[in-house]
Length: 193
Image (cartoon, rainbow, N blue to C red):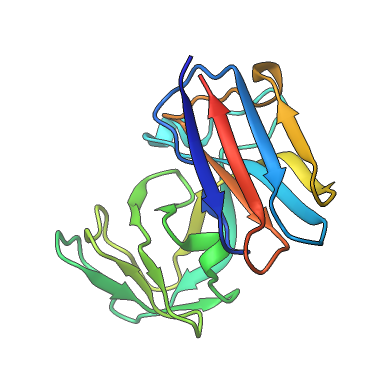
């Protein structure tokens, strides 16, 4: 039996890294010296075709979600293979919503992966370019989030162990993320496979 270890060091969303789909357990340990740590654990859909975007899950929700953020450039942006920065308006773009996420149109067609979000919320950077042209006022979508744990408090000095029936996910079609309320992250993760 092998394992991966990961230290969470920020309040920002952090992808839980693993190259395995078959886990035996995942343990979250509060490593903060004195405080409880509250965490969210969720998956984000990573669709690879527009037919997947409109495919509904058992709960009836689509696999992409409108961010409320729109393209703000009169002439739009052409397909590119080089870095491009995209001006946006509408709902303020945040790193939480866009950073390292695949960005789609309403039909699930992929524009590209957002690799940077300016602190002002505009522009968004797509380092590998755009796979599809962007027109002014286009609504930007990202993969839908599905929470496994939401606002779960781990007391100081305690651990939370999840077994596969609680968190085993398809790492091809979903990314697994954690966010905490601790300024230094405050969580160690051991994933056994």
